[in-house]
Every structure is written in structure tokens, then in C-alpha cells.
Amino acid sequence: MGKLKAFMEVPRLEAGYRPLHERIHDFGEVEQTLNSRDRMAQASRCMDCGVPFCHWACPLGNKDSEWNDALCKGDWELAYRLLNATNDFPEFTGRICPALCEKACVLNLTDHAPVTNRENEAAITETAWHEDYIKPMTFPRNGKSVAVIGAGPSGLVAANRLNRMGYGVTVFDKNEAAGGLLRYGIPNFKLSKNIIDRRLDILIEEGIRFVYNTVVEASSLPEGFDAYVLATGTPEARDLKNVPGRELKGVHLALELLSQQNRVLSGAEYSKDERVTCKGKDVLVIGGGDTGSDCIGTAHRQGCKSVTQIEIMPRPVEGPDDPKNPWPNYPRVLKTTSSHEEGCTRRWNINTLEFIGKNGKLCGVRVQPIDWQPNPEGGRPLMVEAGDPEVIKCEACFLAMGFLKPQHPDYPDNVFVCGDALNGASLVVRAMASGRDAAHKVDSYLQSV
Image (cartoon, rainbow, N blue to C red; front, side, top):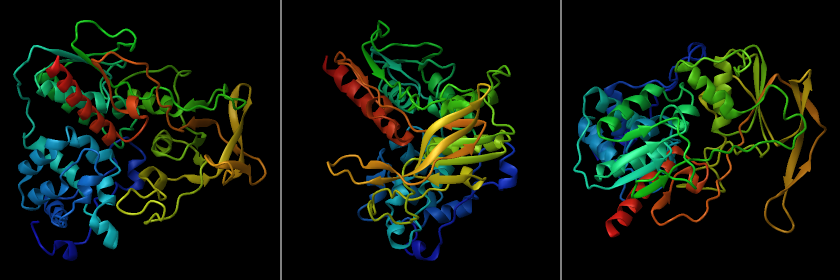
């Protein structure tokens, strides 16, 4: 604890976002940064609690109090070493993690002003890159090899850990570059792809081999490896296939928009018919989570006319507290993202009835207000009508309702599943923790055979 009374004397200060009128015209990262002095002052607010609930809340078990103390004292390199000991890629989580640690911070309980752990994490890591604290390393080899199927966050962490343990690691991925949803799902305005590329350069120099544009089926794994890690994510998105008009042009899954836009920014070209664009259109986003928010921000940057977001579930409580999920658990409260701030009509308790088209093209979606009532037999509440149907005018609609958890057969003892492929769609930080766990399970297995 660098400064005993800093948590009482130094107010919480966030870096904030770039001006709205500026950021909606490009795909640069929206978050700003504090200067080093202010960042160190923010780190000094950490109380080094006797029971560090931040450590408990983080799926990776990050030791926030330790690296905040080092940062407070100006030892940026030690701060990075402490952070990197539990977090393989803090440059990712420092940008896109919802910061479960901050919600569990004691200062969040007392005055709703937790330590800025996520921003501190990002600042520490950026300094580590700028000061060359992050350099390729060499590791003794043990003669055994592992194939990692999927180059998303869980697969990359598993590969990194196994490589450092001395295994020869080959990563297979169906896409043209590594990153999974980090590259093809999260917009550049939240995570610039050069952040991924610079880390990949290190991993390659350290000996990890990447094989792209290769679909590997779980039933036909590549031969010649001692063990396998399946980190294939959740490839199937929830859809509205049974809703009339789903086939109309203009109705898309969210990733059709997000992944294509990211590819365009990396230099890919599409024909006019292939291009998914919101330019000049009224846009409807179905789904109230982070993916839906990403669609909103992308629609604005493509030059949409308007955006409406609907959600079938009730409006969350305003917060900051959630009576049904109290501290130190993550509160399920209304979340307003940078994309929402850029302009969006938001509605809850809305069910989708029909996609309406003209000449094969979407022109509106018929929806209906609903309510939820307790199920007398228990289980999922019952959906009931709560208003007359109406039509929301739109020429583009994006389905952002999450992903289906994959089902797996029984695998041989040398096959290990991790990340979203194991647990279903969740946070990047949880996928990374799962990849780390899988690496240790692989090591234990190969050490015993």
C-alpha cells in the first residue's frame, strides 16, 4: 500500500472516451489515456485489502493490489511482471474486460468509486511494450508436441503456456489470421488489431507455429501430436429461423457485419452485393448485450440513418447496486456503452414477430411488447403479450442474441476442451483462464504417460 490515505484523498479519475463528434467518423480506439502521473495516483488508491476481493473476482486471479502498489511507486516493469504472471495478454483484457475486479473492490462497496484496475492494467502493459520489457524468450524443449485447434483467446493462452513449458505447439485456425473473436468479432474501435499482431509476432518468435485457413474437425484431428487442445469457441449463433421473413435481404447475424467490417479495415475487398453496410439505413439491432452494442457503434461509423436496439428481457435496474446480485458479485445493472452514447433508441420486453419485406428486401420488423410472469410449474418465466404489435421501420437488422453452447462427444484422454467451446459463450477473461487451465491439464497428462 504505497500511500495510506490515498483512497480518501485521491478521487477516482477515468480517462474517458474521445469526443463523440470525432470518434464516430473513424474506427480508432475510443478510449483515451491518462498521463503517467495521474495513472500512478490512481494506482495509489488501492487499499491493499486484507481480503482482496478483486483477486477473488478475477477469473485469472490477478493480484491487483501487488501491481497497483508497484505502479504507485513508479516501478512500471515490476508492475508488468506481476501482472503478466497471472495474465498472459493484459493488453487484451485492459481494453475489453468488464472489470469484475472493480465491481468487487471494497471502494466500490463504500462509495462506488473503485480503483481503476482495468485502465491501470492497460497503461502498465502499454508502457511495457514501449520500454521493451516484452521481448521474445527461448525455452528448453521436452520433445513432445501439442496441437491447439482454434486461435482465439483461450487457444492463444493455452499455446503460450504450453510453449513456455517446452512443448512444440502448432495452432490451427479456420480464419486467415489468429485472434478469433478478438479479431473478427470485437470492433477496432474497442481493440485495434495491431495490438493482436504485435503479440503474435512475439509468440511466433518464441516458437509457436500457426497454420491458417484450415478447418480441423474434432472427429479427424491431425496426426503426429501427443495431445490436443480444442479451443474452437461457439461457432453457432442464436438465430430467428422460425420467424417469417428471416430470408429477406438485410437480415443478418451480428458477426456478418462485425467480422466483415474488421476484414475491410485490414484490406479485404467485397463486391457491392456481398458488402454488409448500414450507410443511409435505419438499423435495428435485436439483442441487448455487448455484441449488439458493437453493432450500434459499427452502424454509426458506416453512416447509418438511425439505430434502434430491442431486447426481449426486462430493462435492468439503474444501479449502481443490484439487490438480486449484491457486492462483491458483478451487478446486473443497466449498462450504457460508448456506442449507446453515440445515439440509439433502446427498448426492452420486445418480442420479434415477423420480418417485413418488399421486393425481397427488408423494410421493417413487426414486434410486440411483452411481459414475463412466474411459471406456476417453476423454471423459466412465461412470456405474455403486453401491448399491440407494431412495425419498426428498418432496412438492416442484426441478430445479436448470443451463441449456442457446443455439444461434444467423448474424446480420447489426450484431447482437452477449453474456452467457450467448453463453457459456452462468456467473457474473454474467462476464456483466457480456461485456456490456462487446459494447458496445465495437458502438462499433467503428458507428464504421466
